[in-house]
Image: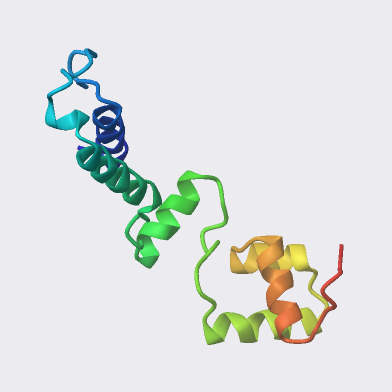
Length: 124
């Protein structure tokens, strides 16, 4: 069962409704007890704020490709990539060219160049 489905069921239970039949629970049902209702809403809220497990680099790259993003979008910068972006920028490569070469977003390239003191933050 996916977290989204479980969260939906818990919310329905907290509202005093049978998630299978859609009928309201009897007044003497444990689901109508205030402490149970609070517990269900607490679990629901925790599930809502739960984060997906962190992906490894290959999973993130696959997700990027599937979503039409550059393959390295959102991945940490390596020392080699930092060196490449600085060297190639100093040689005259544009931010767009660097984004293509390093397979990153324009914003990521710009942010790295700002971090290295090679461009000002307000390039746009």
